[in-house]
Image (cartoon, rainbow, N blue to C red; front, side, top):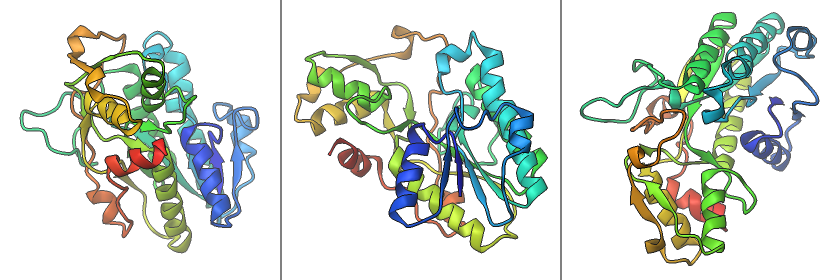
Length: 285
């Protein structure tokens, strides 16, 4: 197994779980491999037994609005380069993508399926969708895994749960949007699921490519998640107040509804990721 973006949230947990399972995994961070460099990627040592999991991404959603070239290089170009290399060597590619490929929620929201129309509203979402398409075009055996609202929850983490943890500990009473609903996903659970998928691809080398969804079970608004963090830490959840997206404007638009259905994931014979409440309890512990 080869992991690109190995120093990020999911990549770090991939390496940890691979070690716990006694798997041979090579983690490549930015210093080890520039995934936007065609020459460097073409020299990547892969063989037909290798599963490459690409976690490298430009994830600064707001910054992408003013840095479209930077976001495109990592999110759109790099996946195509990596897929070209797996196609050349016979290795398999798992490419991690996002719920931000979807646009405005339908009138009667239901969990998104992989075949639903994509209409990203942000630069981040557009570049991630371009990356999915580039990877599948270069190597149709690629498996794209869309996920959502990923966090580690560590005290020093910059993700949402880590931020709420610091606010709770520091006596800050935040206002959090309650009109954006999604699928909170613990990075450890996603990483474990990706390794299960890698094992499946290694065992069934002829399995065709696909787009699948893997995210924490259930759904929550950011406000719900924030209150659950406070409660999980023994802080008063009433310290978290609701607000609307309009009251908390950001440079990049966020999907109002981006809950992901697990049906495509379980159809592969894989266990669904745990419910977000259970996952949060473990992350905070």
